[in-house]
Length: 412
Figure 1 (cartoon, rainbow, N blue to C red):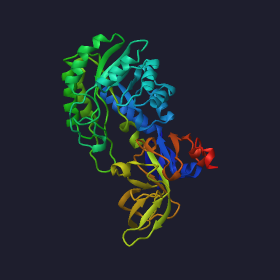
Figure 2 (figure 1 turned 180 degrees about the vertical axis):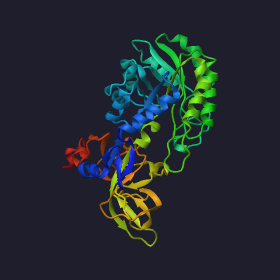
Figure 3 (figure 1 turned 30 degrees about the vertical axis):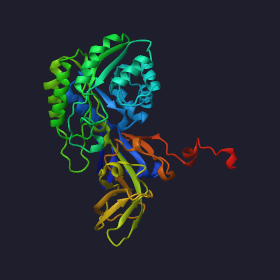
């Protein structure tokens, strides 16, 4: 059985059993490459820790490609969706509606009706106003809802991906949820089934989870619920982070939530796909400056937004190792923004123009956050599975970018 994931073999970087130079040659760059084997390994690791009775509902926003969602479906996972588009994708990929939860603070009436039509497992309500809108839509059959608890927990993560503190736009305090449960009997078409919470993303410490789980358990002891959705947020190693203690995380679930006897759901995204993807890019040039040289890639911040948005670090591996002397350089893209920098002060063997590089841990919030700024076409996406590989999203061209644009007749 071939090794899954990303590794060097005879000095050449591989995805599963596939030479990434061959991938770059066949499909071009920039391209996202995903390892199906690593995704399955990540699922198996989490499932083994949590046990078979916890529903793993993949957080689709991390990577919404239909091929990735199809892997989740084939592995028996559910889905956590945050838009009508993600709901449609999950259904199309074969994820059963009874395993789909719909989260998010800004569900439109059309998205709520779509959830009604598919009779999904649960709509996670974020406010009293959202409950009122659901009632006003007059669903034709009972709608299962959960109430999202804001446990006022500070998670040790980037401020832009922390969602469980008291001033966050997400969720409601426990007192408000208790009041809504008292009033819900007035609405016969609303079936309150559970409570949910989610305190943030890229979490590698367990203390915040412990506090959130205790808050969830306390509320579950005060209102009648069938299910508890305890969110996701498990982090991965990008640089020097401590790996998340999955066994310790599972033990918190088993100690605090399992004894309540409720149906349990978790919503991992990054943990399942983050380390299962790389962004391949070619070296365009090495620009000399009075300070450090700058290595220019053909991938930019439009392809991988995380470094510009979160100051995130995606380490870079050459696809072909060489014996050149080490240099210290900054690594940048071609986008006309000073923020289009992937790495600063990066040490590596000096590359040549045309060499292929792999920006690591790009499987989550990579393509799903990509755009066409500077009229740069979206990159291709490639799936590797053992020794097989295929395009799972074709590279855009300029016709794709301008499709739908029109010039009013009076402009000539």
